[in-house]
Length: 281
Image 1 (tube, rainbow, N blue to C red):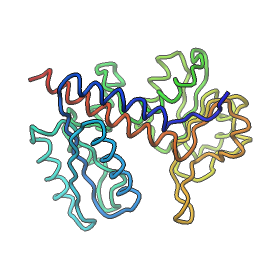
Image 2 (cartoon, rainbow, N blue to C red):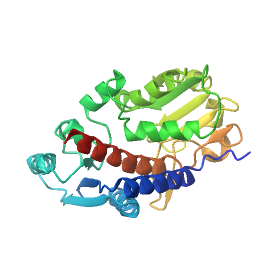
Image 3 (cartoon, rainbow, N blue to C red):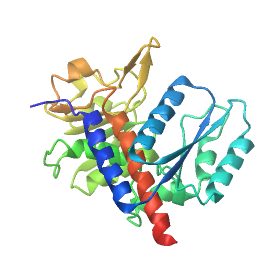
């Protein structure tokens, strides 16, 4: 049995299906990405999204703003995209430079074009069961877990994350499958007591090798959302992959796990928003 959950392969299969659906339905979804500043990692991610979009047949529009742009300039760009009838989906590439109010920028988006599903209104509707539109990060993580073909009902999941709001949708998806799910902060004094009991451990704390072997339950499913740069050359996750690999039943690598799936879900959600707009017209 292959312990490693190959997010890259899974994402490629999903992209093939998206491409087929776009062709069969004869539509041309349109995605606009706003990038502020010159962060190399963000630039790389935008290029990956651009390449993937063009491959499946999604029109990709880049709005590049310099780091010293004012908050008002960013808000005006978003307002323009909100009103542009040719744009189906908007993505704000995170993180934004530190002098910006990220929540304010995200809330400026039209929720009907919020492809990441990060707008508070988008998350609220999903958590209340009023929308079938699933935030991309949550959907990608859920599909990685489902790909193991493990029986989920009755399992316990722990999400280690600094942000509750971004991971509540993941918790809902798991709860709907009969998984008891808790979100725990990385600085929780009882963190190890929580993680060691988790049949499913999802880690998103932004700290390299944060989760050690002795913090992981035997034969658990480990999903590593972390992306950390080491010595400007290596990308590693929040999990001590080499040592935890021996203990986990299934584990995602970094890179090659959650990252490719997040891009695939971006394309999937862009298609969903395009179809929603077409239906509403």
